[in-house]
Image 1: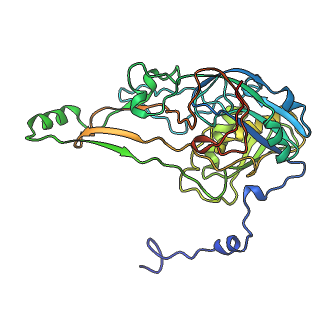
Image 2: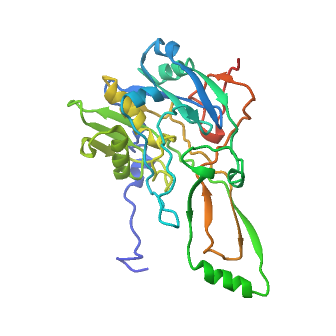
Image 3: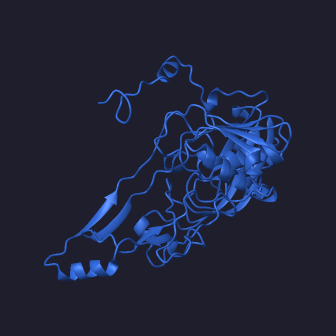
Length: 355
C-alpha cells in the first residue's frame, strides 16, 4: 500500500468524540421552545379513510396543533417527487403517483402516517395521538410482487395501471431470441431476492427551525443527502429552495438507505414538521425526536425474477408498490386508534379498538 494517494491508509480523526459521547446528533439539539411531533399510523395494508376525528386530540393538554392530510392540502403542501425517476423502454415517463406526507383518502401500507400531533413535549404528543380516531374501510391488499401483476389484482395507485411503475429493456432482444432458438439446451431459473431492512442505531429524526423572517426554514436532518432533501422538501412546501437550509449533523448509521427522500418514511418528515412549523405559527421548532421517531424502513418484500439463463434484454416489469401488512384486515370496517410509539411498517405492533 502506498504512503499517499489512491490506496493509502487514511487516519480516522472523528472516532474519539464518538467513543467519549461527544457526538452531535439530531437528538442532541434542543432549540428553545422546541415542540414534539407524534404520528398516527395506519394499521391496515390497504384501506379507505372513511372518517378522521381529531377533536379529542386537539383538546389534550399541551397540544399545539393536530394536522391531517386535508390540512396539508389546504396549506398548499404538495407531494414529494421521486428522487431518481426512470423512463420506460419506449422513452415514456414512469408512473409516478403522488406521494403525500400524510395520507389523503386512502392508506396503502401498514404504518402510513394519517395524522400529526404537535405538542409541548414528546409524552404529550404521544398521548394525544392515542386520542385520534380513524374509521378505516379495509380494501384488498397486495402482498406479493408477482401477485401484484396478475390479472384482477387490486390496484394500489390509479396512476399505475396493473401495479407497474415502469418497464425497462437492455441489450438486443432479437439477438437474444436468435441465440436461444439455436441453443441445444435452455435452462430456466427463478430467483428470489432476500428481504432487506436497514436499521441504523439512530432513528430518522429531524428538527425544523422556523427563522425570524417567517419565510425561511432550517432543517437539521439525519440524512446522507442534504442537498436532495432541500430541493424536494422546498418543492413540496412551495417555497424557494434558497429559503430552506438543511444541516446534516452526525448520522448514526446509513450505508445508503438514508440517501433517499420518501414521505411515508421518517427520513422525509421535512414536509410534515415544516408545514406544522410554518403554517401554524408555532413559536418553537417542531421536533421529530427519537421517542416519537422510531427507526423505520418498510422491509422490502421478496422480489422475484424468472428468466431463461441470462436473457437480460427481455423487458422486465416492476410493480409500483406492494403493501406489506402485519395484520389481516377484517371484512368489515374497523375504527382504530393507532399508537405512534410502535415501530412503523412491517415490524409494527399496534393497539386498535374495533367497533
